[in-house]
Amino acid sequence: MRTPILRSRLRRGVAASAAFASLAAGLAACGGDGDAATRTGSAPAGTVTVGALSNGAAEETRLKVPEVKSISAELPKSVADRGKLVIGVGALPAGFPPLAYVGEDQKTLTGAEPDLGRLVAAVLGLEPELKNSTWENMFVGIDSGKVDVALSNVTDTEERKKKYEFASYRQDNLAFEALKKNNWNFDGDYRNLAGRTVAVSAGTNQERILLEWKAKLAKQGRKLDVKYYQDNNATALALASGKIDLSFGPNPGIAYHITQTAKTPNPTRNAGKFSGAGATLQGLIAATAKKDSGLAKPLADAINHLIKNGQYAKWLAAWNLSNEAVPSSLVDPPGLPLDNS
Image (cartoon, rainbow, N blue to C red; front, top):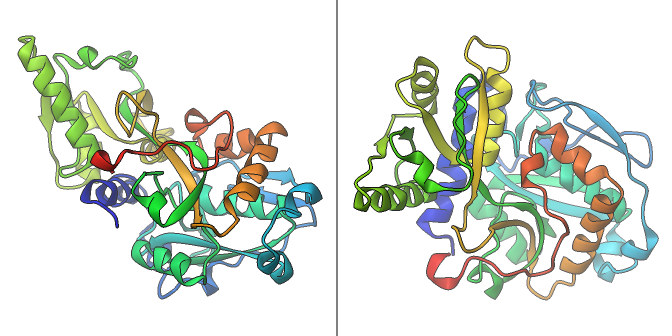
């Protein structure tokens, strides 16, 4: 079902950002199905804490999120009667901060995606149950009915709509990372890359886009130098030392790395974003449920309630992901077309 480009976007982009931080011990603690390791302590009724146990990647924030009965009334009877929303996260084996990874207590699943699951469940009046697995087994869980919804950086594509229904909640963006002292900005124009040296991971969606820009610039008699490094630690060192001007990768991974460099001698910043779907379509990340499950609408309505009442913005801000905000959650919005999904 997945294509190599989408697989690499998740694993070689966001997931690889784990190499930037000292989270190895915590990440390694997440094994097996991961269900036992993902249960959180109880919070006061009607509240959800986001950014907990983040190892410095987020600002811990407690939000008031009471049940909205007009939305919970939309739930399929089987889910409502169970009183639990089973949320699939495909973060095994290594996690992909800041979206989903094992927290600083080396047992609790934290990250922006699990936190959104907890927020949505609160609006729906349900207990969240997080099931961490490999990416492949997350979809097996949806197909088998063991998982109600996946919240795991799943891109909305027309191919996936054959089996799943979606409720969008984040933009699917790539971004440029630069040293904070570098005043260069992308400004949505590939021509601004002329004369720059940019690192990218091989075999990824971002590499494909960057090489297309390189070819366009070459036709104009202008040069873009593309560099490859063994891993993201090597890329970070190259950026810090000035061997490269920029790195190009998934926006969440870059947002995470920025938090990790903030107190170092060479802090970095986001120098501009670009849709992971390309210039003609804003890619979207979406809550993913089995087709015809009846979950997409209540999920979208719950997300829209969070948007309207401000909890959504506070959730994104806590994880340094405000630049991926959507104005509203849509049910089955246009996704990556079949020839690019």
